[in-house]
Image (tube, rainbow, N blue to C red; front, side, top):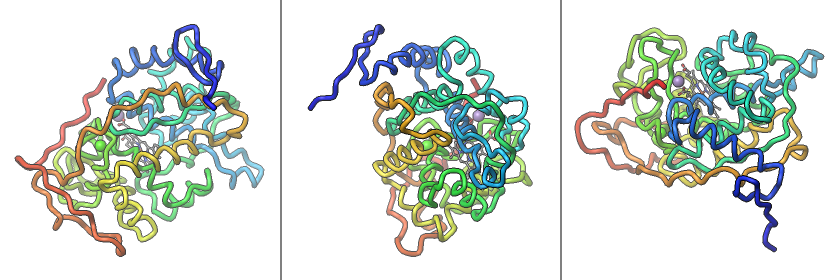
Length: 343
Ligand code: HEM
Ligand SMILES: [Ca+2]
Ligand SMILES: [Mn+2]
């Protein structure tokens, strides 16, 4: 039977009347936060913020009688003064401050707004999956504790343990969540080169991140000696130590490689892991599923390739079971990646 739909005052339809409230919010953020529907800096930062709010939960800590955080509960914005002082949250104050007036002029919880903004923002990125949106989370009444957000200098052991504690995420789900770094740049890892992306296509939700992190590192795009940074294969591209290690650790390397040139898996695995992350701290059955308000993202706009000047021989093969996929090398002069423009 066809799903019943309601028509909202704004003219759009959705399966649940409670979701009608989201259409004016979406219009507002698309126009005024995401510069008319771009996949740029504010989208990247809004996606990062969904993670830094949601991962703030530790059942292990709560079991000892100490509050371990409420997950995706808006605490990062509600207790901005506290949580943005945690080292791992360096820089998220910018997007919190940009989002605050939107939260003030709409009638959503801060927790719901942060996750909504991430999902809508990602829908602007060619190749992205259509992410799920839920509403009905309760806002935090206390901040998350420090040290719930993984750092780029953490070991694979500690990263996997942290995700497992936060939400029983498997190693494969951790790898899937790192697909987020395909639309990402760093401002603070090397503060001399803000906006330096993790792959050559930070405006596309493609598999280049999983390809380029497997290439031999040869240079620092800015200064050497930054904590959590290792050498990258391309001028203008930065590599996190954690991404380097996850790409090479035997618990994660084959999963990492499996995303190379597999856009369908990239979309489905990220969508599923994001859905799990976005409801941390809530019972999903208490929330309203408003996923049908999310726009359909543009189709993928690039084909998997080695950057110009890089070949199969530059791959540091880590997965022992399966050879690295055969890919064409981009023609033209050796790729140098441009920074993501600041907003
Ligand atoms: C092992 C886990 C992770 C570590 C260690 C990590 C670390 C980092 C670091 C150091 C940055 C650069 C921040 C800056 O200097 O501006 C960054 C950026 C980013 N991260 Fe992660 N991250 C992890 C997982 C995730 C997850 C699970 C998501 C989302 C689902 C995510 C989304 C992003 C995005 C979108 C950016 C780019 C922000 C921008 O371009 O402004 N990260 N991450
Ligand atoms: Ca990309
Ligand atoms: Mn940024």
